[in-house]
Image 1 (tube, rainbow, N blue to C red):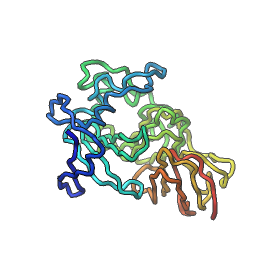
Image 2: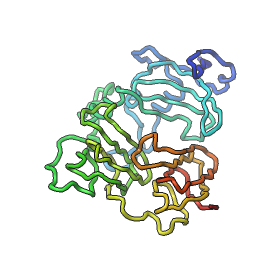
Image 3: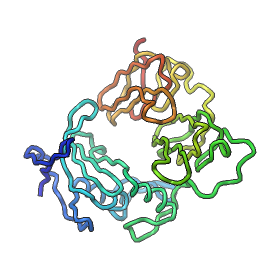
Amino acid sequence: WIISQTVDRAGNVGTSDSVKNYNVTAQDVGSPTQHNVASVFWDFMNSSGTVYDNGGYTNAKLFNNPFYATGYPLTEAYWTNVLVGGVQKQVLVQVFERRVLTYTPSNPDGWKVEAGNVGQHYYTWRYTDLKQGTAPGTGGTNPSPPTTGGSQPTPPATPATTFGDGTFLVGTDIAAGTYTNSDSSQGCYWERDSSLDGSVSSIIANSVSISRDIVTISSDDVAFVSDSCGTWTLDNKALTSNTTAPFTDGTYRVGRDISPGTWRNSDSSQYCYWQRTSGFGGTLDEILDNGLSDQIQTVQIQAGDVGFSSENCGTWTRIGN
């Protein structure tokens, strides 16, 4: 049947005839949780495309088992009204064990279905089951994932200021400080941890990015985790040749790499995200302002800002003071 159920921000459930125009149906896919799956999500979970496997790219199914990355559905799918980039949009939302999937009909192709990683179930699957080579619900074995933990090498006499991927003790393996990574092309993931117990509550801050990043590791941190980030090096040199010259996606120091002023980006077709920050610790309270839009953005970078970062924004050009 066509999904017409709605939910508002207060949790009130209703129906709407207008959303029937999107022609999204509920499908009984035999889930043991006895919930249906929205047709747009089921299509995504069974889709094929370019995947990275055994050191190369190939065209194949994204998941051999459609529930592999999401887990089973925990709710039905509901339409809701969401403010996205300053614009109210109709969005279909469905909660699964390891993901929350959303479908935004007005998004460009390739971005209509999006996923958020949620909860202890996701954390156990991502950081315990995958490390052990098991895949819940697949009945099979995964290829070995990139190393993000495990046994540690013998600590060096002096904490390193250059390091690659892995899990490192701060003050023992690596020195505290502000670092820049060399390669985010495979989706750089890092996290700052207050303990090694593997709990979500131990994560001080984390980030996933496809652009060069800067992160400040505090002397109070217990550990730092890096996956697919290339080499981290103490951030001690300018990343641009001229602070007023155009720059592309990534993270920059204001005053050293880029100057304060009014800047405008060149391309928001893939949804440009930018943020002004008061530091590089990766915490939410460091974000001074941010934006996400498929429209061209004009941003006033302030003299008091510490950092500026962007993804999918093309080239930023300074247009005024």
